[in-house]
Length: 210
Image 1 (spheres, helix red, strand yellow):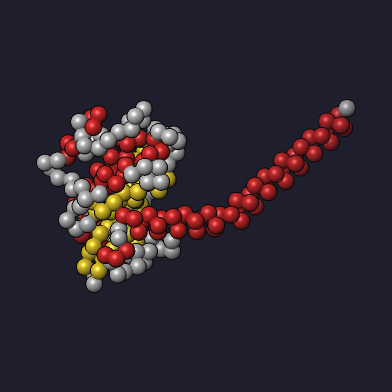
Image 2: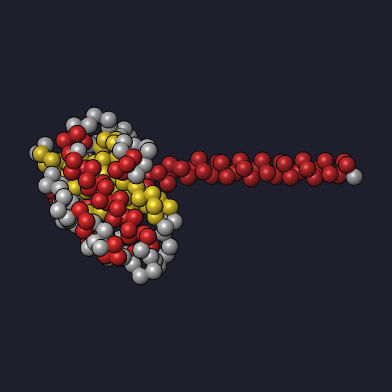
């Protein structure tokens, strides 16, 4: 009996080892493909928040790392992409995270021009409820377009809220938490870029290979 149990135990252990090895190997083989796909998606989103016709530099090569947890939502560095035309600043597109989404983090890319105007906002990653909170995704609705051309100032700061909270941004029926989180995160990112434009432009902490 003991021999049979020992044999079965060894078989289970071997099976578990093989399965773990297969999973690890699959992860390694697909990691580069996943990373490449994420980068292609990011570049697509950058084209939507900064019109390609407005700048003449390589955004990937003018990418800097910025650490501002209170403003950008993460303890780790976020990437800022600097767009220029004839070396003159056109816009900064910065990553930000809304840590208080309904289902967790909502990662964004937000562009701001030197005048403080929002060029665009796009959601890069989220886990929000399909049919409700996922409307923050441009693929699901045009809601994020409501940020375009907005300016954050001392006189309109209170407007940067969803309508339920007294602001100007629509909420979704049955899903107020998600748009509220995105509005708050976008507001903080816009404020950070507007108040630190020159600092970001002169940042030498480059992103390295994307």
